[in-house]
Image 1 (tube, rainbow, N blue to C red):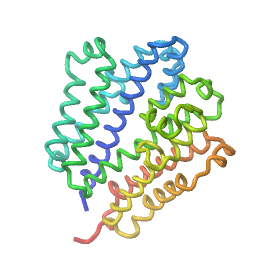
Image 2 (image 1 turned 180 degrees about the vertical axis):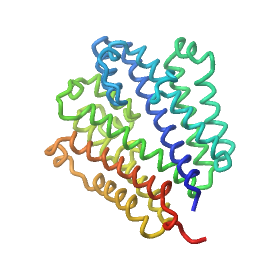
Image 3 (image 1 turned 60 degrees about the vertical axis):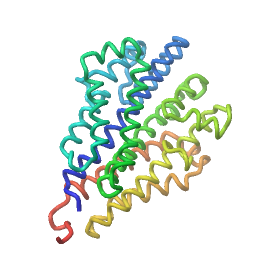
Length: 314
């Protein structure tokens, strides 16, 4: 079995890289909204900030400053630059477990984000800056998939990525389609922004043409089995990677994370939109978020903080 500290670092690399990409996309959509209408820009900013756990009306009224903070504020533990710094530090600690291509790509995006000229580059062209960062993170993921052996280390990396994605998507959907009557449920501009925040506009349009409705968006981002950022797709990947990893555990340690992941996968696989609407989308999404958090805790207990008596014999 892989060393606990190595598994933990690879898992967190996946989480931090996914978090950074998500924050880039939310920041970009928030800034693009300022090119249209002031009221719409404020609404989109409010959605984006609430989705990252910072529902501040004053910050939402100044989208550009809010985006700059989300991207470049080293004092904010949830900013993009902080997430990349933590991903790089974890990668440095397990340098022998990842390939040169993955290390170089992650190192390059970190150095560009922390360079002295980063603030000027963001000021001169925030959209270009964010798009280049997203492209670099896609290249990191591609390098990991193409050059790393698809064994334990790669699976821990992907497990972290998909668990982070599921939690972030659930939170975004809860903000947009919860039960508090937000105007975003009716505003076409805000609904389109929500799709862009999920990198889902083009895939959604291919599935539903130009019929942009809250119910269809929720169905697509919750239950589509082929879209890689839907909750159903993410939870299927979580269960698949976890099932492959638990074979390295003693039988008594397998039950926790594998059972939780299987239950979450089934919850999305057999979910019915009418039942979700009847109980309230907010309640369903909160349950998904809670179960993702429970899987994270069970993973840590099984693979990182496991007692000596649960280790397989040499």
